Amino acid sequence: MKVLFIVLSLISVTILGGCLNQGTKMVLLDEEIVKIEFSPSKGVGSTNADVSVSFEDSHSIKVLEQVIKHSVEKKVDVHKEPDYDLVVSYGDQLPMHAIHLWLGNEGEESILMYMVGEGETFKTTTTATKQLRELIVQNQ
Image (cartoon, rainbow, N blue to C red; front, side, top):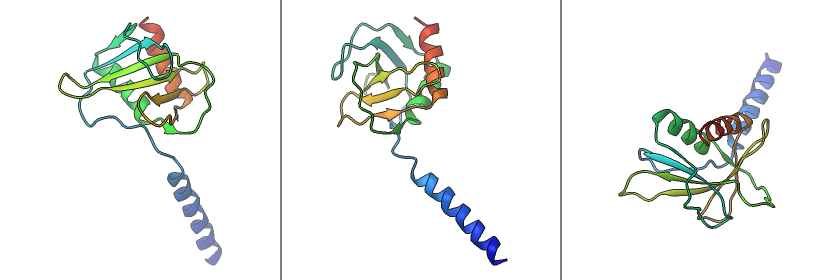
């Protein structure tokens, strides 16, 4: 009985530790997203106004919103320019979120970074990269 208690305690501590180490996630406004635009990036700190693809359908917006909100902060030294600039729009009366995207290759994680911020980088999962690649490639 004592051994079972110790084993269960260790499992609980491991699960709790895993939950606590998930890191900070990206946040968006608690408002309805009306549009997410992608443009080829011209570099960190600026937004390219030449939009290459715009998503206004609820399915694409939901997928992109989940990718962004589930990206976890992880320091990454990026030595190249971002692939894309994303602009998340909530409507005319609300501010927008501008985000840089380094799109990973198949089987890799992607990197996101708020355009305005302290330079924190956030990583997606490989599944999220696959979803991003499918949306972007299919619509360019």
